[in-house]
Image (tube, rainbow over all chains, first blue to last red; front, side, top):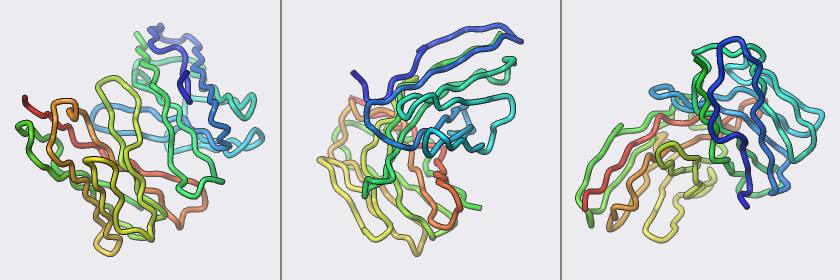
Length: 114
Length: 114
């Protein structure tokens, strides 16, 4: 099993629909992140969480919300999807207790809003 | 504001050639720099992470160097193989931000021709 699992892998949804992307991890990391990747724009941070009671906005949080249900689970919601939210979404984790303090990424969710 | 650039944007080389990918950052106050590999439509796989106090890291045919003062990192790939074809991203974590912020470069798309 992957250390960081994202579901679904692919999703097509209609404009205006609410959709949730889920992320779970088995690494025991305390920090979790949601990024989106767009061609030519690279990876941009949507939200991040340092622990279950800590949620912070990233650089492009408008139109998104998150929930940290447990240390291992961090979900991203699009309240009312719009076409420009079509992108590849990644969940990532890191651990402040690790001396090398790097990121581990999930395999991504490809979201298409039509 | 930290900005991360990668040159070249794309690179095509014959199999067996040694090559260098470049990553530049504008703010030298970094905590670490991480190199990732991304296969098309897939997640990011961590290759190497260099702490700000280190000059280089090696893993197999990969060697990453860091020169904080000049704001540069290079990823050296020895004896390239077709399986090395992917997009390579560098990510810089700053030390002066009040929260955990990692800035990604746009990536270098590498194609190794058999």
